[in-house]
Image (tube, rainbow, N blue to C red; front, side):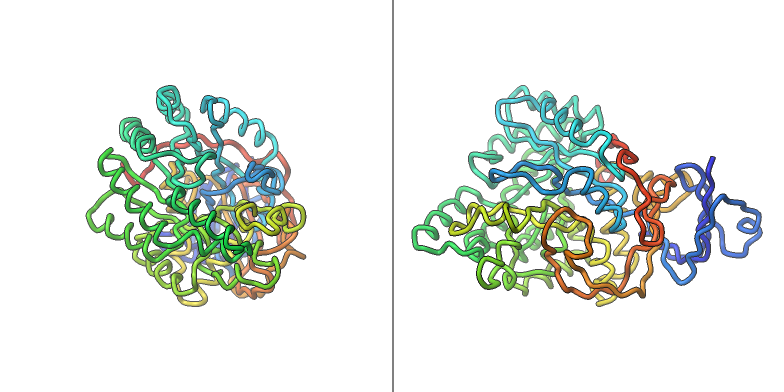
Length: 466
């Protein structure tokens, strides 16, 4: 059994920071000990990694990705092979992607389709949520079976009428089922019916540029839907996880629910923390690069998001990684913003951007690990194997250089997309070496992993509700 020793680094978890040597045996963390201690001096290893002056952190858990995802007449440009390789480059060692139920089809059909896409293709470990787009008696019963099999979270949409949209009655039924089987309802909270009216009116008035995507998807319609989802969850007695929260008013709805000790949780994404409507308004068609839903907001919303992350009203930062190339995909919406495929690339950038937030004073180092590793692992039933560094946990480890300087660019990233949403942004900190279940997949900035290394991980139910 291969043994790897990581020596001399500052080990950072959500719970503590301590200088420690980390012994990896096979695919798990075997032990931690103070550098120079008698325990550490007695260890032997096949390979020793010097982490002096570096951080040793858990591999990131990105709980919201869309790889090989059909949307808007095309599909996201990263496959499970390219997307998980890019995740590894960025220090993320587990993703949770979304399997999709097609209307009129069984949940099982969608899940089997996504298993077929991912099996043997992934460079890091992966799991699945289930998009519930057709709430029927049959699909409600299937939810129970999927929970038993380790697919323990179900996404519903208050947006996209005619595609993924569920009405309030369907949402209530799904929430009631989740309340009984232990599943977690994930909600895309935007009032899609009202948004479609505003889209129609904008296009009729000749407002077709990408910036109008943000203008019609109003913050108040995100807040209204968030409020409504919370009240439906209260009626059903169900926990609720609101995905990609972007607006100050939506954060306020979640905070008010949590002040009542309701089991309501919130996620935001790097694009809402670092980008804004200024990007959507870039000249020509450049703003199409930044079209996603929920949309980017005016910059003043960012303070509320950072505050929510510090106060734990928002628990998780995921990417909603759903890349579409600018050429050949985003340009499907030339002359009609409503036809621009919704989504941004980011799975490779999340850990670095959040470290920059530490440098900038928005969050602490331990909170960085909490929102990027530990909380998503607990939220989606992956802990204690994922998201922390402790004996018995999977040896998903990152040696991180907190002083390295880098510039984010499409010229150097590894995502299969022809632009970067953060092009030219200067970052302090960089992933140096990554272990996935004890195997070195990034070795001093060289990819040494392999397609097929990643394993499917069945999940338990949300550990915040235990």
